Image 1 (cartoon, rainbow, N blue to C red):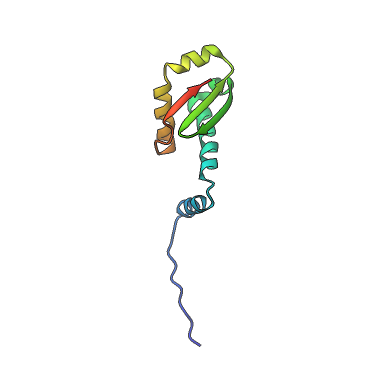
Image 2 (image 1 turned 30 degrees about the vertical axis):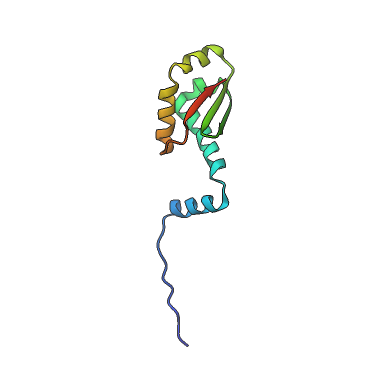
Length: 100
């Protein structure tokens, strides 16, 4: 009997998970979850407590806030928030932020 040798290519878990998410088309859902988590981390607990809803659709991040004063204040720094989020995500997937 001749034993066949299998050659295995060593891959990182990150690379394997990336391929799985692309094949299963679940990367959009994972991005949504990651963006929600990053919002709380980047903006801090004070802003997070006034955030009611976060939704990412068509390269736009929709954030619903329950404080008009905070919404006005954050509107002045939307570009900076956008840059921080994209930097943390590692790509420029968020093109626009709409505060409601």
